[in-house]
Length: 306
Image (cartoon, rainbow, N blue to C red; front, side, top):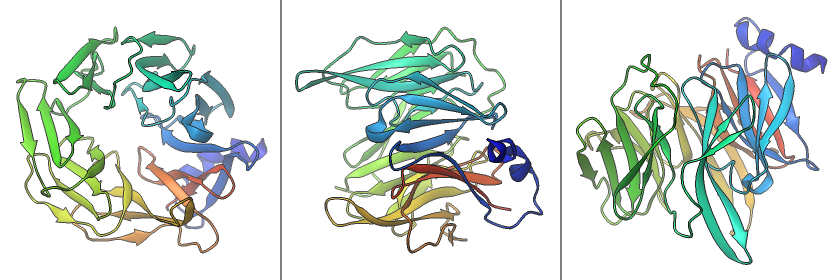
């Protein structure tokens, strides 16, 4: 427990050894993965093997609690801007049939607010909009919008844009005007893992069987960033963090974590190991550290970048 008490100390001191790495949680017998900082930097949310459940690691009190054990809750979940709630698409199974629903989980109490009924067809992921007072869910027919019951966060100074993918199309929806712009950055490409920058001005994505790319939200300035997987933006929208992973068709065989500018400059291998498979990175809000999981041992680590 003593090493956990030093986490904030290590994050805050820039004069410590560069790339100081700290084991936070997890083991081969208790697989933990897909960590994400809360916007206030005080907590981490993460999940267990196969994205089952959501847990909160409080970096101030050094405590861990589970807020749900539902299937798929840990896949592509999203923090609210006030760090008090987490949005997720959860699943349940009736024999072999999968049903999905959108829920908001209160981080403090663990209570959940269902926004949809369980449905068999829910191919898209939900996201926050309108200062967290609403959630939007893309569907094959268009956009569904749900009230969250949260007061609008007026401190969010960004345009009300949301993005999602349909085959080779990136649809950028403007919730202020109700208009949608359809971009086709690479014709006939199978686009996956779209990530919109926090300032809503840029997007990063990867092409299945191809490279990672960035572009402006209006579709201009398409930039090939080379090989890369699961891009994620820094909170200031200036950097992209991602992994370059290899597999043998059955399981991952190697992976390192990189950062890069959206114009393709300053590419840096942050982990650069031969014996570990580092994956699923996330920047801290101040950009001074990252968290990630290691496929080999089922653990989550924090790395100080300064």
